[in-house]
Image (cartoon, rainbow, N blue to C red):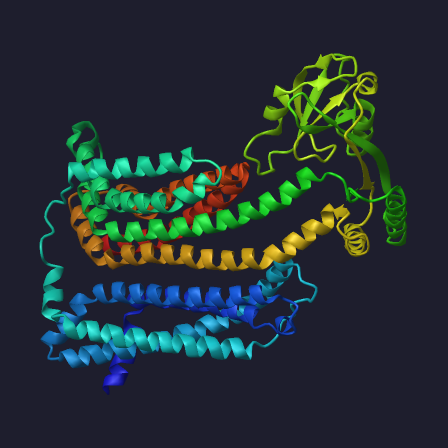
Length: 629
């Protein structure tokens, strides 16, 4: 048997050891390849996607590739660590350090080759689904038909074979600079009882509270200013949390006899502090990577929601006409005629309302829109909003939606002023209503028709016309909106066409962000998987010994489940809390409630993690049971 045959058979004989590393590498290649299929699609070569998006996609491909490099390097490092005894045995049998390095190099190249080919084949299977999703998310004019992605295959194959070659060389170099005998002894050395500093444990809690408190206290653009300091403080606090505070808390639980001596708790807690200490760096890394994934996807989804919902809330009518201030009556009449003609040509059935709105001086030296109740109610009826009927001694303040980014609420300013009448009397505003019936960013008053006739002369008047489409196909509404935007430029706003344009521009960013977020999240899950299976041989020996002194199968399952749950959920729970705080701070930046969006994103990731945990638990328990039965 030649040395190359030995390396090849070694991989086949130790399938369990290699499979986690192989699958992680395969999945990383698959994600990069599916992204490449999308990025190199012929539909984009014609220039329909603007340059900024193409630059964004190239940069994202680079980020995925660089992250893949570090992820595979970490996986390889964990893989090498789990094979200390095997190397020791080979050295005892006469293998030289050089032969061990060559064997690791060949094995790694072999795994790299098969995982690259496997990732490309798996990517081809999912290619059609990815292109269909991209077509819907991107909202592009061309359809993304399936094609044979030769360029994507070549780029992926060359990139990842180069990546595996570099990593193999690097790992061979690391093995050369370390004494393998020391690695063999490493497993047998006693770890001793893990210790934690009370000062550092308190510092961890203080850093996290300070970071969270600052993130939740700041508002508006203060969120941007506080972002970097908060990230540094929370990152440092997270590291000390896993290395010190968690071990300290476990020690406190162990000191509590009523908890420690209860059922199998002794077995669970005795091992838990070792596990927390040993895995502290992995937990920290997984928590930070997962936080980046949660926050990035949550921010992108939340920002899209803010843009689309905000535009819709502020513009409830299908089309809104607002002429320029210096437009003459003739120009306005021509514009209105042109709008109605276009709607008729595009078969858009729409009801129209038209009004002359007056702006008046107030007692606080600013000009404000004051509307008749009858005008307000006519417009409100068009979008099924409630009518309002102010008394003769009352002025109702109407404020726009919360989606507006304003430093001060319009109602706070308007409530301090009064509505002056011709006879010198003043009407005090009493009620505030949130409504988008008449578009006015700074808010306005609505008074009864009788009071309106008693107002002083208006400073200026503005024509406002709106149309509300009834039962018309959305595509026709958008087409009419596009035509209006081109022919009655800057005067007609079509909410459906504006949303279409926003989604079209934002789709690629959301799609790319989702890709990178998934890579980060899956990588974090793989880190946990590696840590779990690296210790499985030791766990098997431990549980076999305990089974001999009476541990039942149900107790074994319970202990193992709790241990895996701690390993899987500790960093993810921390990441979910970090993500929730980050998204809450984002909602304060825009003064817009993102609770639903944050709940959906974080809930989805938590659900996926639970599924992942159940699958891993099933196989892990099966392996441990096989050893003790």
